[in-house]
Image (cartoon, rainbow, N blue to C red):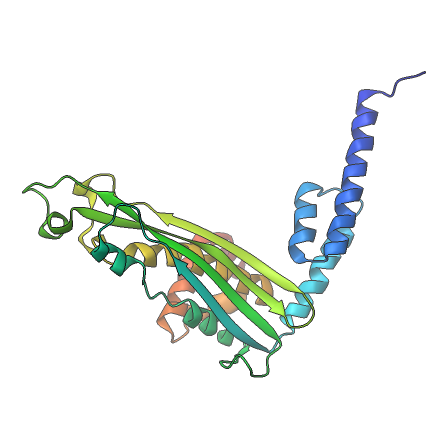
Length: 256
């Protein structure tokens, strides 16, 4: 019995795996499933169908005119931190809903506040956050604030932003995960970071805000974010500017 050459066996196995993955993606029929398939098999004979599937689903999402925003936040205490620190850090008061509203309204989408109101899709933000505790040795050389508590906080925010059309299951999701570590030494501690919410805010700006802007850009195009730089809402301006700064290719495309 003749043996198949190794490269033929590999080709056959790869083809079978690609066909199985394609069937799974097609049955799942989500943007994430199609994109996952393309990431793994960019040159597959099914690649064009996968791209077409993404385009069809994205077009459905772009036609949405009215949404309802739901934000679910859960914060966990940091091991070893004092009660005073935990009280400050487990209620950071971050503007998740406000930034979502500002960016989507700027894109021309109406935001329905009442959960029983009329809207076509739900924008669900799921957040998990925790402070990061770091203790420092006390001595007279440290600032009064650090000396008083002997600690500094970092923070981590992670979660997802998902836009889902009601009754259809069509959705688009962006994940985020950003951790701000405490300074390793007390000499490098910025005064504004000590025992306040700045680490959470930085994680919000660099993690959640960036992912939200990426979702908005994917749906409505880069021009929406470029024009948002002049939006009267400060948080929307800040998010759009930071996103533009971290994605210089978009600025080059616009000729900025």
